[in-house]
Length: 302
Image (tube, rainbow, N blue to C red):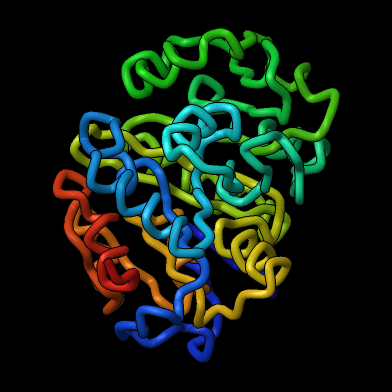
């Protein structure tokens, strides 16, 4: 499957798009859930009802996989709360790894392509973050905090042990990164998207966006060509022997589109962005009302 994704919108063929219908209770074998805005409530916690629903689904023999834009290391504490073994698809599909640390697949960006990307985005150097697949200082690299402190202060505080400051940031590119990220206000990232479109990178990268309008926060993730949550979920489902009709996916944002398009039973959160709500997919409750539990309740009998 090829990927031509801009702004988190996949250009997969119309024939691939699933019908929005309720599956039989015994037809779902894999549930893929996003984390932020989906599994986590507005207080950045997993509600007791959502937790109970995921555990019940797991006990019923349904496999659970978390699919997130977070780095693997940053997603692990969330996954550990579920209380059972599972796999995580992290960094928007770039890394698929078990909770125990076993790696199934990595889709890294060639460092020369990343170097060209950073060079073409000179006006956004203060918004640029590079991530690498390690668990030490230097897993996250930026030049300075001046343009990021306001927009992602909480994320910076939680990841400070992994952050290294390198100027110019190109000097950090001694190995292939997982991705580059541009982060800032919605208006600032609209300009960044325009710059990316005119950069000439074309189909050599995948561009995905995640937006939280209520926080005036937008993130643009640039990954290796053909890398997305949807491609990674399709790869994992094939490995596990699941048909797409047996896959349920739950998400809320632009970077979930490819995952939802692949799943035979896509479900969007009540707090989902307007772009997702306009696609005719099933809508569950919001993340402030245990929407994950409500969605699971539709396919897993008590």
